[in-house]
Image: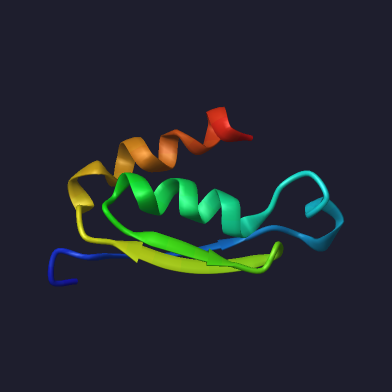
Length: 64
C-alpha cells in the first residue's frame, strides 16, 4: 500500500536454533529500503521499494 511493503516472517520453534525469523526478515527488508526484526520465531518489518520484492524473497533460499 502507498508504495510500501509490509513483511512478516515465522519460523517454527523447533527450527529457531538454525533459522531466526528476525534475521531472515531483516535480510529481505534491507533489500527493499527498510528494516525489520523480532523474535527468533516471529518477526515483522517493511520497506519502501516494492519493485525489488520478488528478488528479495528469492534471496531467502540462498540465506537458508
